[in-house]
Image (tube, rainbow, N blue to C red; front, side, top):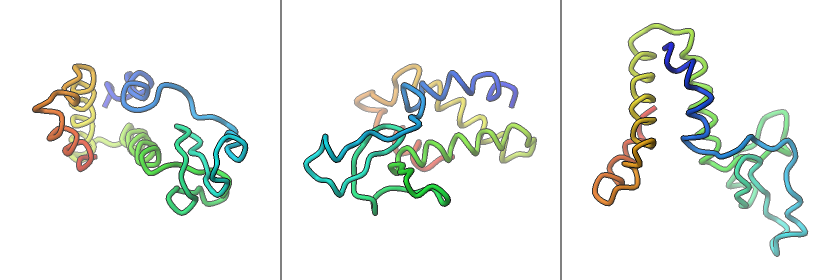
Amino acid sequence: MKNSTKNLDSRINVRAHTGPMRTQPHDIANNSPAADQVECWCCATTATPDKMVHLGNHPEVHLCPQCAHFVHQQAWEIEDQDRHGFGATARDTIRGLRTQVIEHGWHNNTYLGAPLQWLGKHLP
């Protein structure tokens, strides 16, 4: 668990996003032909509101499913920092392996990429 605490900041950018989440969404009504679309506050992907995840007390905040999954993984990692059971240890090991795969670029490999990406979607 100590490794996840030390490497949390470095792995966040490696795994998904290249920058911090914005505090305000872009005004896509002027930039997009479809005014009924909203923009993900994290990665700027546009979609209809029914295809986005909304935060309970902040309906103006929209996250695409990929970013919502990423945020969920990060929350789980933070919760696991205080846990010491088998499940937390297994998830920490899986996160470490995932980091190694991404650092080596194996997820982009012609032969290994598809199976590794499938595993990544189905593991915590």
